[in-house]
Length: 341
Image (cartoon, rainbow, N blue to C red; front, side):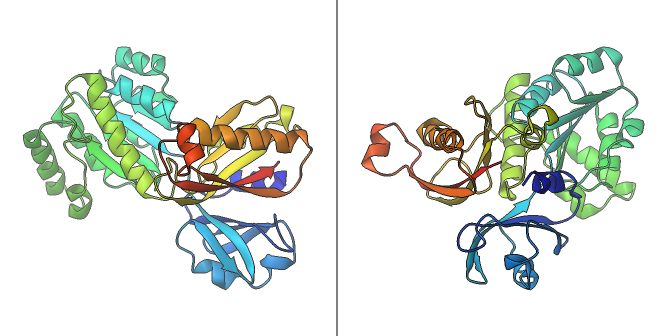
């Protein structure tokens, strides 16, 4: 099944992509990949792959469906979340650190060498030390790109916003007072920017939590980005998970992938959240933490040690009395698909 993960890695993330896994019946474990509503990869030339494309085209959200008498998990695949920070000042540093902490690629654009070095030291994935207009030409933008404009002045804000408004994006946020933001918006509109895009710029940037310090402002900014990001499907294969699965040194080492396929109530993670379990108990990613994740980890390790094959579905109920005794305070229920890779 490694070919499936190679195919996922090679997919064009600018298109609408979906992974389909059969979870029961004769074709249990069979997989399909669709891109732009066309089947581009299948694990078998029979079974679900035959004649199901029309039904799959109607699916618009991740979840469990019944297709041709089979239960399948359909997962809309998002691309890697990318944060582009325009400016390398004091607010940018904690934005970079939090962005990297939650697994995002963080690119920083900064024209001052000293501040560019600070961004590198903070852990930015890449730093472009050149004028903003020039650096933005290196950034393509897509439906998974979040732009954060935190420059040192409204003149630079305007340069950045004019360029960013022409790019595909998931989010544009701009720091500054309402007066400063209104002035920048008015100026870019006068230069021909799309009014619908400018109207939807998040400004003042960040959730209103009364933030004062650079660190608090960064928390507000990243909270807003997480809020916008998670309104979309959270499904997909994080880069760190794909890298671990396809690592040539350990490719033959069995691993277990846990994916939330159904969620009810107030469970902490959404459908599509993933955790890769290695034989030594190390995990990449999370399906929610706490006792629920510990239970899934135990079952995944047992499956690996028994030399299990195929797929299994585990149910975790965080509402029952035993869950309360174990401290599962979130409540809710999840079904988790376990697959040995």
